Image (tube, rainbow, N blue to C red):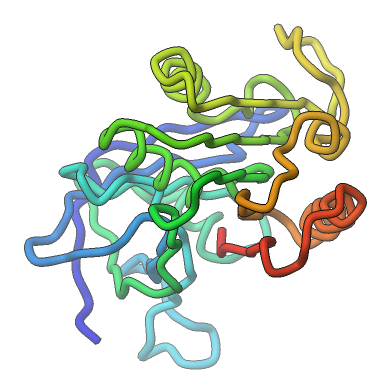
Length: 241
């Protein structure tokens, strides 16, 4: 499979307790590269190689957050200070630099085939959901779509302005958000985990399909909540973050 070298167009850093917790990175889209909303790619930095094989770059998977209609590629990456790729990117990646990309990978989400769609995501798990939502908003949303999004504080409500605008512009689209940590922030919405809000407001009919993305712990809690709601397992799907 072909590797692409992609120029870094911009880097947005989201802070938590004084250090960066998320990177939103935009790359120049390579000529000829095609993907579908919800798919992922492998990314590597030219300056970081595998510990056990210094001849190979250290690739890690990340969902594309941009829509295929957009002229750039966007990635929402949670920074983990464990000596891996994300910490290296936080310390070394600069606008004008390059990342190596391989892909795309992953099943294509058949969102156009569903009459009703519900996304339940936490943290950087918003990436594949925002890719699909951008597609739907650009095409003109004509079916019921819900997004349930859990995050630590209001500072981590990623893509908040874009999601709220999409909701106000499209009667079919609803956003439900919950911040699970109290703190000195401006949040005036639901506090706690997203699952109670999901059980209260989530679609329950046979036409709705649920797409989940987040940490292993949050995925387990989401699945338990959906089963309590009576959602059949064939309508519950997991997507890579």
